[in-house]
Amino acid sequence: MSRYLRLLTLVTVVLMNCGVLAGAAKVTTLRVPDGGLQPVTAVDEKGSVHLIFYKGEANAGDIFYAKSSDGGATFSKEIQVNSNAGSAVAAGNIRGAHLAIGKNGRVHVAWMGSGKAPKGPENATPMLYARLNEAGNAFEPEKNVMQFAYGLDGGGSVAADGLGNVYVVWHADMPGAKGEANRAVFIARSNDEGKTFKREEPAYKQPTGACACCGMRAYATSKGEVAILFRSAIGEAKKMPEIRDMFLLTSKDKGATFTGVDLHAWKVNMCVMSSAAISEGASSLLAAWETKGQIYFSKIDPSSLRPAAPIEAPGAAGKRKHPAIAANAAGETIVAWTNGMGWMKGGVVEWQVFDKSGAPTAEKGKADGVPPNSLISVFARADGGFTVVY
Image (cartoon, rainbow, N blue to C red):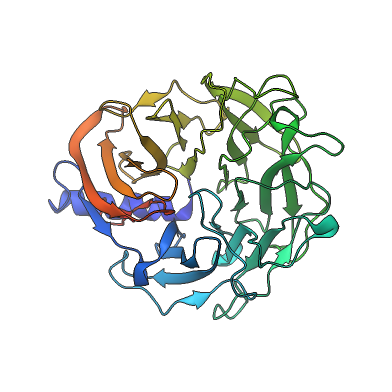
């Protein structure tokens, strides 16, 4: 358990003894500052909330960062993350920036470059990375961590631990091969807090393919384990793959080797443009994803890194997409998702709180107004409640 989660546990117990946290967890909502899109949040060991969001045209915009020390009630003045103006992209919901908190609370951000970003080798779309400087008042200039794994689509992700390790992941064509069935997940690793990165390499040796326009998510635990959640694309290389199961990769050796688990089956011969979420709870990792227009989540055992059977969100499947997930110190879990969204189309955000056993509680709700090309985020507050950001 991380120091932040231990702090959350202590605060929760105190508040429960005082009668503050009676019953189900309270859920509040928060709009992205300045009309921004695609919020991503993370909570550090001191309980501060870190937020990144996107502003600008869908095909070429900028990423901004802000911090809250009061559970999201107020945020600091925003700082621009990308030094090359317009080098980020939001079109299609899933190609935006990801956020991770590493050693000594340093902020790490990674994103897929836009058409205005400096091109990589062979004129390739870059996988960009930037970190907050030592003073905490600006981001260092971004750099492309991609050296040979070209064909970026669906964005990428970033993870960091308290040991100084940083991981940037994305999926791309295997060298010399084309087609979704020949795609693979690549990982670029740093052991000096993102100062330098090793040449990327395939994270998993078994052929799984990767759904080209689907997003992915990476997470590093407080103990240094790494998890990657992505959608596969299994089939013949020259045909549209029909097997697009959700896959979980986990590593116990700081990203050197990974074990793969097929989490959930979905047979469909099209790119479903889905995204996924991973977070760390008090006693397990948590993963959430979409299958056939429905949202599912699973608890991942911290010792074996094996996932439990998927839990389905209450309510009918349909156009549910883009999940977010978080847990409080009491073991309650919130799963939030969008509904009704599509290409250049907005929707609503819905959420459901689950108890420690995984059963849905009475705490649920929804809110209108998720903008086109946007996403949602959730985080647990120190008072035991949750905040949904959209």
